[in-house]
Amino acid sequence: MQAIEIGIFLHFFVGLFATVNPVGIMPVFVSLTGSMTPEERNKTALTTNTAVVIILVVALVAGQHLLDLFSISIDSFRVAGGLLLLSIAFSMMSGKIGEVKQNKEEKSESAIREQVGVVPLAMPLMAGPGAISSTIVYGSKYPTMTSTIGIAITIVVFAFGCWLLFRSAPLIVRFLGQTGINVITRIMGLILAALGIEFIINGLKVMLPGLV
Image 1 (cartoon, rainbow, N blue to C red):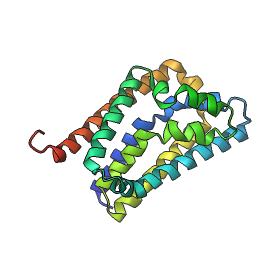
Image 2 (cartoon, rainbow, N blue to C red):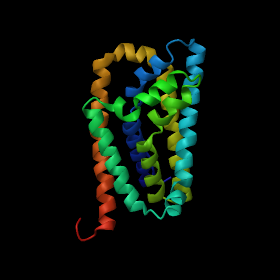
Image 3 (cartoon, rainbow, N blue to C red):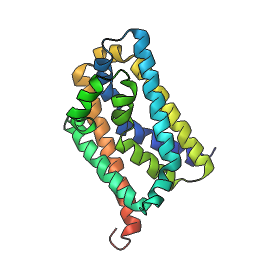
């Protein structure tokens, strides 16, 4: 595999990590699984990340077809996705990411559901609009079979890493504390803002070639 393709997958992985911010989600995971046994908590972590893989791979494979169905150009979607990522990034840097990713109605509904691994952990906290947008944009930008398989493998590797984080979530949250998690969240927000601006610029280059 060429070095340039590995760079694409690494770039996608970093962007996905910044978008999802699994370190910032760990306290939510701990609170939602606080009454579970260690075995049930591990099963929930597996369910969550399996659902994330399914959602993002479906977005990767079928995303372009959905855009074509609604006659939406990938460049328009790239700009919209970039604006969405910027919105999430600003919320992360201001410490309000929880309000963006999960509203009060979703939180109250999910509290009474037995399977919290899918809702709200997988959707919308992890495989939310930002992660789905990034996946569709990368899939459309690199449509070859090799790139698609590589991006899918990157999603699996990302989910595996999140699964490992969630399995050790109680220890990590206790070690980092709320201050440490807030610092990491703000750094991820800064990276995500840069990624969002890149999406917007790349989209505008095609839509408005005389402007950019």
